[in-house]
Length: 532
Ligand SMILES: Nc1ncnc2c1ncn2[C@@H]1O[C@H](COP(=O)(O)OP(=O)(O)OP(=O)(O)O)[C@@H](O)[C@H]1O
Image (cartoon, rainbow, N blue to C red; front, side, top):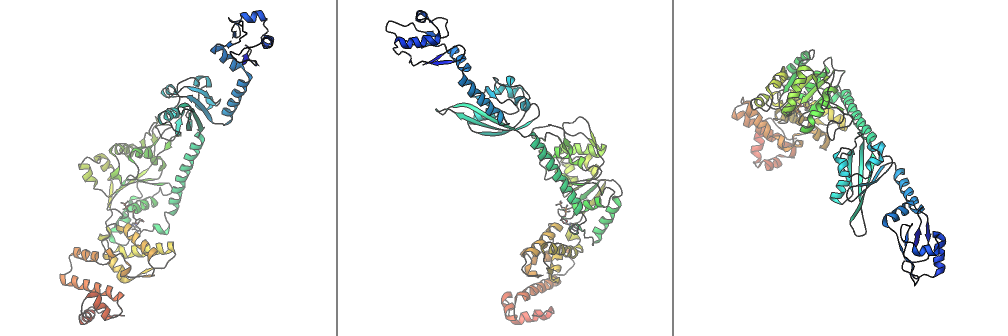
């Protein structure tokens, strides 16, 4: 049995509670308690501990009040050393460690509490985590999550002192499997997040710089051959001298983006950024913050340092708003204000930002129709529509097609280290193709051919099946200038040309076309064709 003294020291007596003891043992006990034998027999009220009166059979038992016991234990050297070790462990991790009981009351916290949480240890210990969350001392409690899920959790927390914490909460179960405590280890990642954000910003700037650097590269060359494109090109060179807003209209892939970039390149703003924003790609809930930026800690999930918007990033340069028809109505109102006043208020800021930006917009939608349906603000439409430029689809400017084919062939031959060439029939065929995806589709077709063709000389048969015949027929039909006979003759010639490529002799050709040899021979003669 352990005999405890008021000063916290202890004495271990070889006596068990209820054990019969002889007088030598009682004497030993007396020595330590410094009581006389007669007083020991009468101890029991108000002493360090209460001994039951020794009865006639010399039975000794001890009774210690619970409060007193706790006090003794706290003062004991063993307790003190465990306590010190635990404190040392909590403090030496460098992370904020909290131990919370299963009711959500904070039992312990490491001494860096003030530095990380912004409050003193004493203000933290003993308080309910629910109350701390309510009073905004912690933004999101990991303890609460552990209590809900009974599992290990990981969360990001913002403290009152604007520190960002990466918190891991661990449930600690007792041997019966019920939750005893929750251990939370929080790492202060504020500096890390700032650095990450700076890195992202630098990457964005690098991307802008590399775009700027590439803008005059060969890939960016603009093919201007047809009269329609020539007109646009020269109009842009004139408009570039002003700051007028330009609205590019036209189907997808016709080159609206290319012309917007050209307009910037030939303007006085060419040495400042050209910021290309695709309004259809930015998620609706982010579009405003991306365009206008925001101040420090404006909303949940925002960068704590605040962020410069794309409009501000385009200061002294050009902002190209591609797919402007996709801009939400609410953002349209804010954009109109920038166009009119050249200033705007970033989210969560109190001072307006003034910018000097040239605006260019583009869309493949019918904005007038959208205005009628109330999907696009009429005032913004008129503001953007100062210089409207419609870029025609490829099928309306076939003169450009052979030059575009040649241009992209060069680009991709260089890129993939090949020397592919197109036969005259291929050029002719592709010139009459409808190109629903316009220049972008043409570019992709040539890239695919250069990458996949085993041969260097590209023939009709190497074209994707959809481009080999049908479209040229329908396209010519659209022009409506040819008679039925002429069109049939032309088709016949194209079919013969294609079959010649894969036939060794007349016999094979007649088999392919399911015609007798004499008919094939006659038709070859008619079209002035020979079998090699
Ligand atoms: N005249 C041209 N000369 C050279 N390349 C061109 C020309 N027109 C378009 N291109 C190329 O075609 C591709 C599509 O052009 P761009 O992205 O400018 O079209 P867009 O009309 O803006 O399309 P979308 O409406 O889908 O955004 C680009 O890779 C571009 O380089």
